[in-house]
Length: 561
Image (cartoon, rainbow, N blue to C red):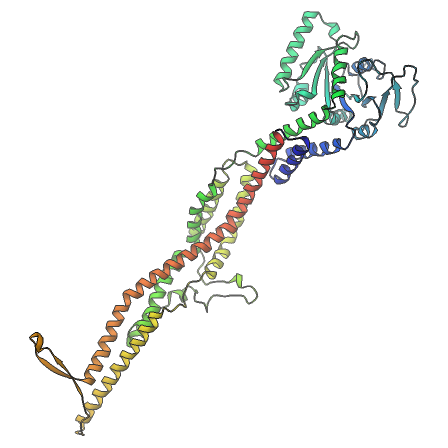
């Protein structure tokens, strides 16, 4: 079902609003003008149809008006025919507001009383006259200024009324019916409005019948070439009255139907809406943004230094694990190595967090290399181009501008993304604590054993009574071996040292495995954070432009249907 005029104009207004700043200014202004005219015309007399007689100097518009009205209302020029101000013949009452909107001051009210004498109304500019047969009421017939007048003001008046008339009757003559200015400037812009356009070839009484038929055929061809193949083309003679009854009948029928105003406004709306649809270009490929997101996030991850951070998390986790589970005597070696996360300023005590704005946390990550920033900018531009493929240049440029703004913000936003990502640097697994306690117990056993052995050796050296030295017997005779005894002090010393070293060695692969898992989790969190940056700084601004374009295209298509 075709939308009504109100729906069309509302849709066109929404399309123009969505395309503000993106649509060509002239096109947007023209669309707004159509919407405004439709609203203004809708608030004026629906009982009257405004038919305008338009044409060039000497075409005989005024004579045609007199012939249709059946009385001498207009005074045709003699030496240089010209009409400087519009003149209206009005059938029926209640058209004053409509004529005020048209800015037509010269008015003739057609009355059925043949004996009526002219009476002055509307500041002396309105006369009464008998209506011709065939027209009852509801018609406002205008005689426009010449569209080719040498006076600019006259042309402006004519063009304004051509825009506002409900029905256009173009009066042409055999000499200038093919004039390029008429067709290119006035008829072709009316393409698609055939139902509200009539072309009248005046002065056919000066032509032989075969000449008149040939010129009418050529005129129909030219009018069709202008996009008005359905427009009615007829021959008339204001002097002899030939064809005038037919023209009068067309005007009377239009007045009786009261559809011309709606048809004209609907046609104007459709025409400009189709141009808006064309200006909106083709819709971008479906899910183009989703397909382009992966490469964008990869580039932003590189720009954010995600690989460096993840590697630092892995190495720091191994370092922390060795400090927690390694042999306490050799931990100083690990502690002497620089903390990878602290080198990047990513330890929780290093990240700078403003007291009043925790969302503005900062790290000490080094500035992104120019090459990486350039690749990020290229990725953003590539993303914009893929998402906006098929869009008009104005929309593509707007989307690229959004992308450029995003590139300028990326160093800060990516740094915030890294700073706000949980790196688990303070996390201490339970098994670390358990192994750490075991290591200290083994170290304590080794110290006790060494002290015990040291005291025993000192006593022997000074030939003092020896300490009681319990022994631990190892019996291997059951397996074909021998048996031997070890003092408990030696067992404690050797067991503590060897046990600590063995536990540290066994903890290393577990620490490496845990470090890889932690790094994997951090990588996923960092990617999520970078995806959020890509979404907020790049995808959403560009998507807003494309959504506005889609809205413009959708509403314009509704208005053009």
